[in-house]
Image 1 (cartoon, one colour):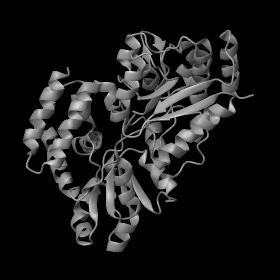
Image 2: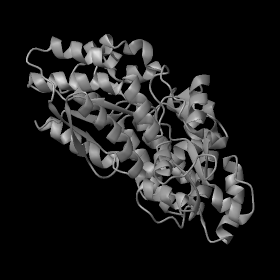
Image 3: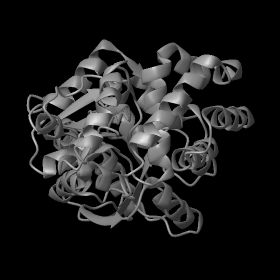
Image 4: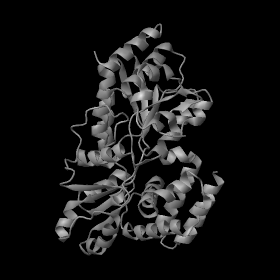
Amino acid sequence: MKTWKIAALMLSVAAPGAAFATELEVTHWWTSGGEAAAVGELAKAFDASGDKWIDGAIAGSGGTARPIMISRITGGDPMGATQFNHGQQALELVQAGLMQDITDVAEANNWAEVIFPKSLLEACTVDGKVYCAPVNIHSPEWLWLSNKVYEDIGIPVPTNWDEFVASAPQVEAAGKIPLALGNQSWQSNLAFGALAIAIGGIDLWKEINVNKNMEAAAGPEMLKVFVAAADARKLAAKSTVQDWNQATNLVITDQAAGQIMGDWAQGEFQVAGEVAGKDYTCLPGMGVNEYISTGGDAFYFPLNADPEITAAQKRLAALLVSPEVQVAFNLKKGSLPIRGDVDLSAANDCMNKGLAILAKGNILPGGDMVWSPDVQTQLGDLQVEFWKSQDMTAEAAQAQYVAILSAGL
């Protein structure tokens, strides 16, 4: 009998009145082709365990879905489980006593020993109690390239950001879009964050985001990042799509040369039948600084007065971290598993790159772990304004950036 089945059985026995075949509504914002395939693995596993996954997908990005989720929880209409990103997004709900304590699940399944990096479980822990089940590691610092675009032009596929920028004139001359970018604030913010790692470097990133050094944020090295972003926005000027997966599709269909996007883009390439290393190239850390941040997704379980719902919530929590589900889900999602003791022999070229970086310990905390949701929202709004307006200078954008971070200290 598998470990997760034993844990689930123990938890069901420990909760009087609990029974299998409990329906549990699960809300999330995974609606693209690759995401739907991945979440389908979670639903399939939960249904096979004896309970019933009621899918509550909310169309749009996390920025669209989170207010709806929070409103339901605070308004007395809680779902059974809900997705949030690792970090501070659900902290106020936990502090308000609206989230289920699942410390017993974590202890029964030895999460403290199997979850890696430990910061993922720490992000789920408030005052010594565990409130969420992390399911993956998602890193945003990737450059995705269409191999065919470069083959048709007759030049090598770029191996780093500088080569990508240098190739842009030839890409444009061939009638292609150099850089695909969706018109949403979080996408602009993600692209900027990836450039901060590639251009500014790891030490500068840590100094600003971990040590909160505002002099560094206002300094000349950070200005270089804004100048690079100003150059990048020119490359994305003809990208008119809205959603991130639409931008990814421009690369998949060879209409655009590249996209700065998280490793979840890999799921879209897979659904389209593209082969990593053959049809497309992925460059973690933009091919410059091969570090990945350990953001990602976790499921929280809103407090519920029904003991059967509570028992089902804990069974789902145990299931999400189980080895079998970790493998099935992350292979489809394009993300990395949150435990290192699973069989990933089926991993493709891109996932193996991420696993190698993770094994080296070349990791950084995700943005949601170092800044509040309010700061993240303001940074996203700034980046949209900056990327959409060719008239906004790098210096002006940097000044606003420093003001937002300073106010968030």
